Image 1 (tube, one colour):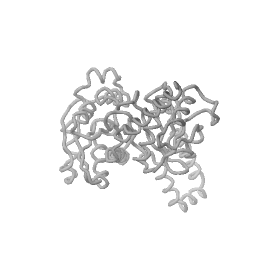
Image 2 (tube, helix red, strand yellow):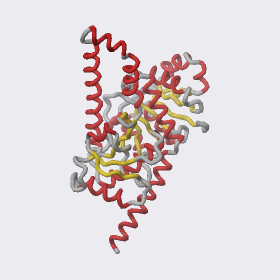
Image 3 (cartoon, one colour):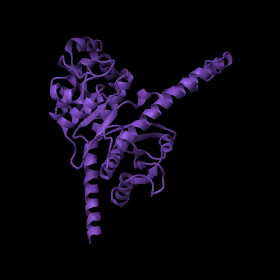
Length: 349
């Protein structure tokens, strides 16, 4: 990266904060040499952590607050009385132009509500969506929405498709990502009205989008498409099911490799391959969910992650800022709105 910019961090959000926030910055500095950081949180806790890394002093500024959003806080409480919390102040820094993006490992509902309240949504976006990427047999894929919107209509799904496509180009580096709508079958007559109408809109638009059509649940891990679009209810269940299955598989593998002496010897002989497997499915490598559709970059780190996972979330935010994510989303939405107007005019004619 050649352009310098600042990221704003909720230094008190997450199970292992503030240590993992500061250590995450230290890990990410090698890849992000042109990024500086605003840390919002308790100065007495943060200063000793920063001073352990002399080189970090030039890229970190601490903004003191003794208030933080707790995991058990409700969304209404965060909106009503959270103006001086580390989370709210970090978001305010983006709204005020001091920072190009905000990252937090804190309360997901509060972060979404505060970010939407402060940053607002992009023109043409009705609802923001939570997006992240994960490993597949073909590489990596993006999926959204992962829980921000339980119910969605066709327009919401189309907007998610546009945002997900831009995300895949900027974060995964794909030249022309393929888009699929998650459904109960690939046939055109299956699914509810929302997914069928969204499919019709995407096929009829003049957007430079590679629309694959409908995909099913087993297509997610297979990497059939680069971007999987669905409503937040289905997306959250699919994500949690995938995470649970991965943990179950990992447990069964460990039990099998330690069950007998012969198994342990085999595991030792295959240790390099097993290490590669462990790294490939390490959830920390995919940490950093983006709140797409907001008028500002906002990334949610997993609350229980460590410094390596948080460093990956920082890199995701930096990639989105450097790639001009929101500007590209605006451009594609303008094309979509123009295409829908042309279709409506043609139908009326």
